[in-house]
Length: 291
Image (cartoon, rainbow, N blue to C red; front, side, top):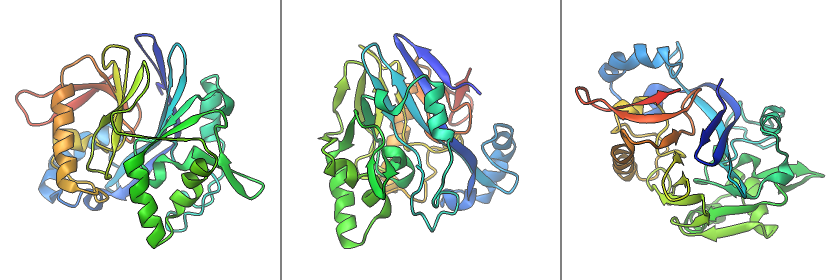
């Protein structure tokens, strides 16, 4: 499993929490038709992106970017010890896979300078915090946590109406600890890392562009979930905040990156997850060409 990629003067590590067949594909993409699924089933299974019982296979992972000056962690997966009763895979999970992945990259929690969340869904903020003596504290004690101000405002409003568990245990403790930087969706974190607006999946979803002077790589977040959406960008994900906007964002993103030398680091594609977007001139859609 390739977990290390070198681009320009950066090293990118995949920190994988786990990978599994999760949601039935017809539920994951409500506008998917049986005919389109039948046309794509064989190649999806050959990539390990669709299970034998027709569930979308998702990888839950962070990207650790080591620049010449900073260590930047993008998205923090599910986390341990979280109350997630509606999600048996995640409820009170306790394992060392994530921390072992970080150690394999040669770093500890104190070595992270920035934590960036592409959005505030439950599977992208979990390791923001850890349980210590009954309290949720920042997992990465020396890091600044970069949050979209607009995204946080939206989720805070939802939480005021009815408690949102992952906001309470994985986001608000960061704010309370004074570790959060609330920014716009075009924020530049450092000379190698900046945010790119990619709205639709959530109200202020962002991708993360990497590189000095050019987009050498980009972390997609959830603007795309599966290789199936490369061939069919029109497929909507069931949790999209604004499905039409999400489709428009995905089409624009794929057209912009197709056949360019930009490494695409997807958040949920199954291993190897990382490659270059390639157009398919005689057929619709795109492919991710991996190493």
